[in-house]
Length: 223
Ligand code: B12
Image (cartoon, rainbow, N blue to C red):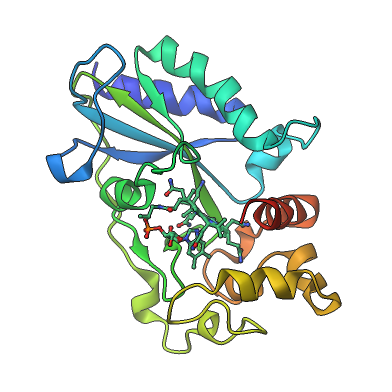
């Protein structure tokens, strides 16, 4: 019966191009807030997307400031209500909810050498769109806990950025944005970040065409 809730979440997300990204039972150090009615959160299920699936359902079709964030709020709020859950979004804040920490707890993912979390199938082409907070314990799938970077000797992600904005050290946001605004940056603007594209994992999940451009333009607007 309890397992059914996770299956129900999967089925509800499928028509939206979204997927569940595992879940966890929070500890104090996870800094998961209580639900709106004040009751402690017993289980969290993350929602996200991988590859181009989301893009077939969401189209950048309106003039809201952050249309993807607005769309996520619009479709995921009623979905959470139907499941008897509260919902948090990664774009809320600051302070931003610690989604990277929660994602590591939920699926056992690790940081790639360039920062973002690496998934053994999706590579670097995935993101988080919400967190369902349940005040009851629900049965969750076990974490994957595989780091494909361990077996990658070449690490092409570390050297692919033409302006060394993304590498082994901190992410140099001004250098990244400066490059994207130059004619030389068209490659990253049109096809997506070159450092992320250099990763051999998840090649079938690259964001392409207007999906890549949408995310790179949103980055330039919001940085
Ligand atoms: C603020 C933020 C940014 C800021 C970072 C500002 C900075 N470094 O000074 C900006 C706007 C630059 C940014 C950019 C991107 N981000 Co961002 N970002 C966030 C956000 C909303 C909050 C992070 C935060 O401040 N946490 C609180 C602090 C205390 O924790 P922290 O671990 O120290 O946070 C740092 C890292 O998260 C880092 N960071 C954030 N994004 C990225 C992206 C890259 C490539 C790197 C190296 C580091 C990095 O910057 C934070 C501050 O130093 C999170 C969502 C969330 N709620 O976690 C997404 C998030 C981390 N970003 C994400 C992504 C995908 C991106 C982009 C790649 C999106 C895109 N355009 O495709 C871009 C990078 C552009 C590129 N070259 O491709 C994903 C990562 C998913 C994953 N696979 O791990 C998240 C989880 C959003 C999501 N919805 O899934 N981001």
